[in-house]
Length: 232
Ligand code: B16
Ligand code: MG
Image 1: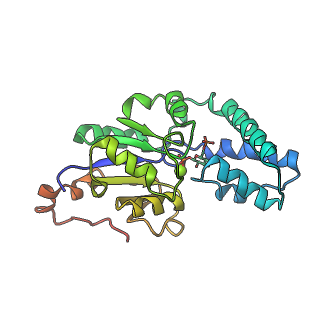
Image 2: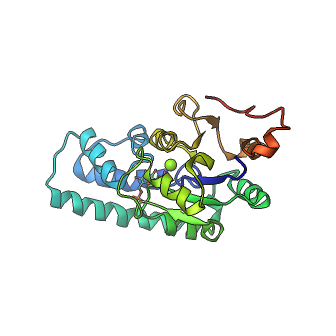
């Protein structure tokens, strides 16, 4: 491999929007009489908006007509937009700017691979949109993670083969999608939860500066530390 590219998930990797998803779902759950906790919210990470509502209704053991579900999805997103339109660059997670600087210095391109239909707006809010070579989001895919579609489109945007792509993800479904796509998967967060990832880090501040050199073949020949960080 002499050329690589990177695909970043958004929520949980670049910014923590899970807390705003929680507030918006919690408001709705209260209206519906469903006891929805932060522990339940973990189940919604990385999954689509529609799937999130299905999970919420499963938690509350509630069935609703399709029209009511559509109404709830619109209302949840309106509430969520109220939170994210107040976001700013101070909400970028630790290590993100440094990592993007490193990739820029190395000439390694990166795109976004997120389930969110609000991804472009969120990146604009935190002033990172201009740095990405491409955006693949919930509007670009027909199948949600763990289906690999989002990352395979990302590889196309990078003009690379899947094996040349490195995916940063915080959700089990996202790691599964990256592995299915035959990409290098990096779990960001709890190592036990993300034990299917090829590599694990608690957050992006932990990525060593020479991390990417191990994937570039001409460097690998002379690099005794090659694949030193691999956890799977
Ligand atoms: P939206 P990611 C995901 O973002 C969130 O983790 C998940 O909780 C949310 O349901 C999904 O986006 C859809 O978001 O309602 O904005 O379309 O982690 O894939 O960047
Ligand atoms: Mg995520």
